[in-house]
Amino acid sequence: MPSEFRTQRLVEWADTDKAGIVHFARFFVFMEQTEHEFWRALGLSVHMKRDENIISWPRLTADCEYFRPVSFEDTLDIHLQIEKQGGKSLSYRFNFHHNGKAVAEGRLKVACCICNPGEKIRAIAIPDFISDQLTQQIAETTAT
Image (cartoon, rainbow, N blue to C red; front, side):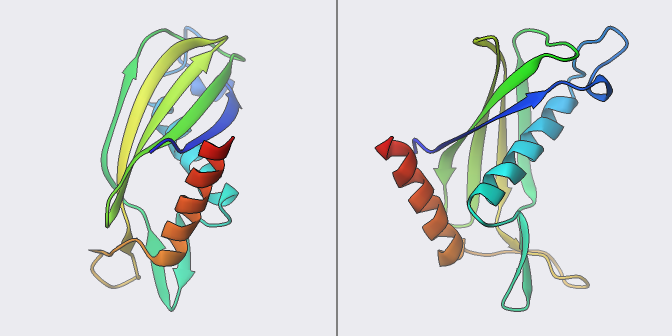
């Protein structure tokens, strides 16, 4: 799927270790923040109420490979791509760049679930209103 969402993020002091280099775990925070921005750009959320149910996207897998360090006040260009849309899941790839150079590549696989308080979390088929937004975003991305 050639769907891509792009954003930027300035590296803050809290993102770094004592050497001023981004701590490896912060890339998982950056991925999640980018995912949330992506959903908001679609007019949706990663945690929304619909028909008396809370639909959310728990993580199934998460990984990140690092190529070069980035430091305090560097600007990261972050590209989110939907690699695969399954019946109940999405797989994302995140490419991180600084000054045109690859910094890291991360992946998340998430499941569409009903997450009502007091109930067991259960995976569901991605609802049409979400799938339609994803399809529209993919069409707009490939048209440009």
